[in-house]
Length: 240
Image (tube, rainbow, N blue to C red):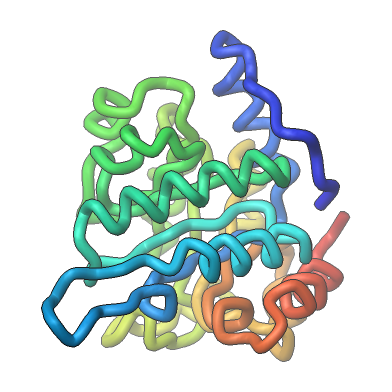
């Protein structure tokens, strides 16, 4: 991704700009905050290591990541809000997109670009009521029926298909394999979709072979010794 000088977008064109960036996006990562949290022995108060988190986010974007989502249900609302606010700042510096999950209130306060919901979370209408029309909204899909519903939902901007392979980030959730991404690719939807779940540099070719040109990864970048190199390796396996 080309590094850009941070500017303040024209509010009247903000939604359009975000959606243009979404269409150009290929690599989307999700990260929790656990390795950036220090809990002093004196108490349960969380201390977010802003320097370490900023470093990771910057390296990931510099390596070719287009969207970064922070998702961590184990931290306080204040810690998550602080992390999302930092994410938004770094994303803007790199011309990328920032994303939140689960907490629409925190997404609104942090001003992130993207909000992602699951099948059992807020409806599209409820999410739009809270966040307005300029925020990009995506939804997770585990079946082809859900994919078709997402494709027909005029309030959604993108959807994800998975988990392709079993992953510890979704314990107990059965893998759908590459067939669901294959079906989604065959739908020729006007909406971009991302395959998600256990994808890494070793198996990404199995996903792209069925027509998927966008992926969401977690451990392949978040647990890498060199986040920039890991992101670059994945981005190099995806279409320009």
